Figure (cartoon, helix red, strand yellow):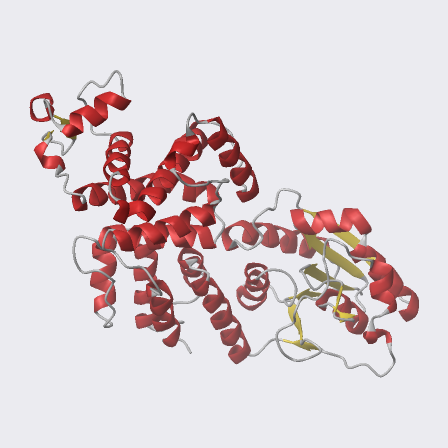
Length: 455
């Protein structure tokens, strides 16, 4: 008869703050005979670099006089261990395989205290609701509160960490405990949902709730969660209709609502570090900003364009004839053919008009840089394999600006920009065209409303 442990590893494994991480502590007190360790791409790099997980288990085995058979499950392509949809099939596969290899009388325990929230939930969910039973084990932190990360995970010395580990002392406290009660399971579910919601990962939260029995969470919570997911997917009218039922109004109940919601959507992409998506989605917002900017400068596009039945705006050669706008366009675009109104046209008009007004100096600078970013980063990223890493974008934009003719003629200094820098420029441009954004936390307010229904 054997005791088998299945565990992911996280940022506090194997040792953190001079105490066992969850994996090591469970092994210390439950003494499994066989230990399966799920290792994501990032954690695999740590193991390959210094063997921190296997080293500490070997040392623990020596002082316990107990042999741990360790099986490393290296998921080298697991770049998103925070995604439930990604990790669930992996963990289910592992548990199914382990159980198929177990003998009568063998017992399986799983570590639900290590890894990402998605990993922890998968294990707790499988143990609670699958048609086979195994025991989830959790571990409290030494401080019985949030466990801070004091170690540099990239410069980690396993030998030094083991030497300073206070849990090696005879009088240390056993911090492991089984999690079998329905109340604890509900708390775990709630905690996981709160994590997903606070990270604006509404689709993962919905996937999570879909795996539970009907009516596990109250209907008002589910309605609000679906409304948030709809909002993030940019179905604004449907989201507002659903949210209004609970007294929640989206900002800007006028023509600027769509633009502002798009701005908030971009902020979330940036928060999630979805840089490639942020770059691709940036153009639509810039086009709206340019159009409003031009209008506020007294240029009414309707006077120079016609609109097709499909709603496509075209330059009218007749309306443009001998106008200042025609001079601007033909002066920059030598083969200007009076066709579709393009973002590049709007940018040139905005830059030209703003450059002549000292009051709009700051807005002019932001428009120039935002337009430059779209030109040299957004368009190539769509069609070529260019890194979306912020540092690479900073270096790339700095180099491209230096290549630009007469870059000093703009009257300001520019040393490259990151996606975060682009967002700051947007947040300066929007108030200048009549759309204040300061301290608007509409999504967080919505999240608090959703969370209040289960806490």
